[in-house]
Length: 265
Image (cartoon, rainbow, N blue to C red; front, side):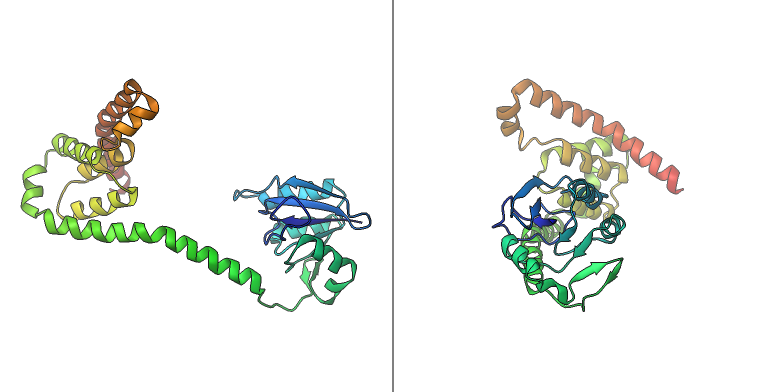
């Protein structure tokens, strides 16, 4: 009998992957000889239909049973329609899981067949721990951005006055857009900070033309990072790219705001 197992690695010593459709590898194992084929999961992406690609691969290999942590409804229905038994809530080392299956340890309620789940629902501790670790890492990655946003708001409100903004942004569409493009080209940081500064400028009666130009050049022009760009891509290319982005940001910003006003109004 051939079984397919979602796996984190390319051998029997790997851990069973939680999601079948998005698992890095799919192992097709002959339970009698323990010979196996390890292939990179053709559906291991976050794109829609990833699980179905993995199903097609499993069916083409003549698989009779699938072992995995979780199988989405679309993939599950495809398996069932092709006469393939699906067993979920599986975790552990691939080789040990296979031995448990051969010993009949999964007959007590983990099987999912015909679209009806026979198991009583319970929390898988390993899956819960992995989810918590993943959430913690994501929060740790985004925390510096949140701190930067708070500091950006505080510094801007402290050192930039309404009078200073009024003296720079006079209400002239072309000049305001030019000033916004210039400031966006000089300033640097996470793109999210440009939204924060843009919102603060709008609250201080700066025109949307200027704010749009600032955001565009913030992410396309980088005078602060110009030396590094020159070292990596060459002087001519770096100067030409930044100059064109600065020049084109002005008409793009003006057209964007005009179209936005036309759509809204």
